[in-house]
Length: 117
Image (cartoon, rainbow, N blue to C red):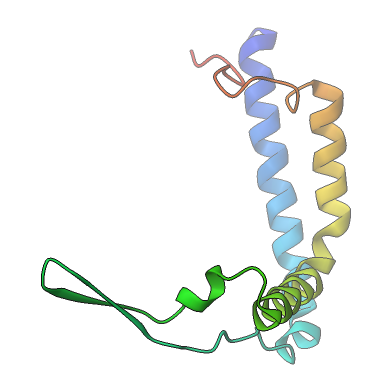
């Protein structure tokens, strides 16, 4: 195998192992995160009528960025996400550092990460 075909295979294998280790560690931390409950957004129905059809959006109130309730809900959601993702911080940093060293973060959106055979 040449280097172009070997690198994607090694990278895929690395990601699978990293995911497995992350998943295993998150299972062992399940007791810590099980007590955390995700924040629940309150439902405030907003009815819009379009072409004689009534559409109900229970979360329309989240569009108002100046509302203190929206800010409080988003901060609670961010705190919950940080707590749940805490066991994966080391893995996240490792993957980010690898992407920086391999240059994949600097690639344009329309460029391929690797060439398929």
